[in-house]
Image 1 (tube, rainbow, N blue to C red):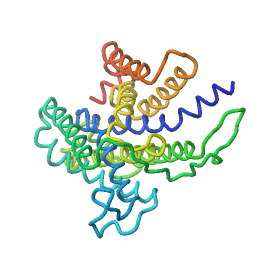
Image 2: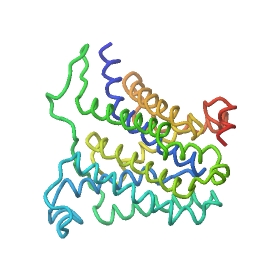
Image 3: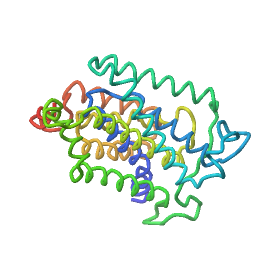
Amino acid sequence: MSLFLQRTFDSLANGSAYAALAVAISMVFRSTGILNLAQGQLAMFSTYVALVLATGPSPYMKFSSNTDLIGAAWPVWAAILGAVAISMVIGAFTERVIIRPISDNPVAAVGATLGLYLLLGAFVRKQWGGRTMFLGSPFPQTAEDRWDIGGARLWYDSVGITLTMIAVLGLLAILQRRTKAGLAFRAVTSNRTGSLLVGIRVSRVLMFGWALAAGIGALAGGLIAGEINVRPDMMGRLLVFGLAAATLGGLRSPVLAFVGGYMFAFLETMLGGYVSFVDSQVTLVWALLVLIIVLFVRPSGLMPRTEAWQQK
């Protein structure tokens, strides 16, 4: 029982990151019909931005020694929020400058996101190298910062990451249903032509959607960096699981994407805990197989077919 509890607790932080990336991917796909392959790389880049802000002026950190904008080292939570803001600007810029001119050609648009994926990865490796760096967590992270429950350890930072992501994604759901901008986004994702006819500025809404998705991914990257550290390939695995989770909802249901993120994390940790020959690479392959099977058997995901048809 204690092993089951421990594996459940261990899945919380990764599940939050998977869920956040899945929701971000589904937001972009719902609004533009484009699969953003650079979602994970943008989140990875944002963690390096947070690292620069948290380090402060230092001759050993790129972009931090010769700028007056940083000043003293920022607290980790402030550095993450600063990185989220910068990531949102990059997301909006990506939609406006890169995606919008070729939005009528989905294949070219997906290719552009792949190019951005490669560009961000090359830039990070060029500027900071491939070594692992430490950002830290905005939540307590010492050996004593935990609860002992039923023989298992529940760490404060895992709870903090989980509650933060649930709160942010819950707030996002409320904003989409209660605010003018949120209702406009829902209208555009449901019927872009009809939205134009009633006077909604579709281009602005789409840019807002890309910015918001980039911000959610950046927040997930900044929070999970305290668990897995900062390195150029840190988000590759998380992106695969996030994409698999988003696919459960046909890339159109944020709710199923959110649930799928935690489900994949739970199954991943359970397989690693109870099946001796299963390692991280095996679970990654398993996630890819689920992704392929869902796309082959039920392209609309687990959504009811009528609902999936209405959202097209």
